[in-house]
Length: 68
Image 1 (cartoon, rainbow, N blue to C red):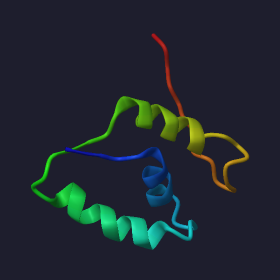
Image 2 (cartoon, one colour; image 1 turned 180 degrees about the horizontal axis):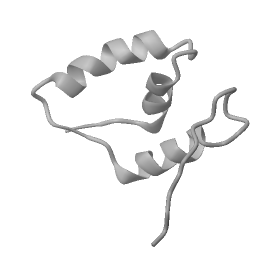
Image 3 (cartoon, rainbow, N blue to C red; image 1 turned 135 degrees about the vertical axis):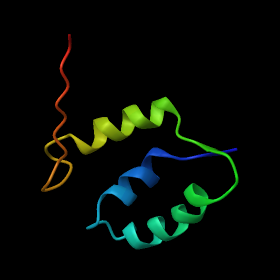
């Protein structure tokens, strides 16, 4: 089982990252391959926390969550 790390997600998300090309090139075979992989919930939480911080980049993600 391959578990993806938060940093990989952040680099793959940000095209301006110097690691973007390398990470997307390395992740594609994992995601599209036949080996099992996982995205731990803790990494999802960390990713959302990191990329929505206004100081993170010039284009932080905006989360629109509605609590019912």
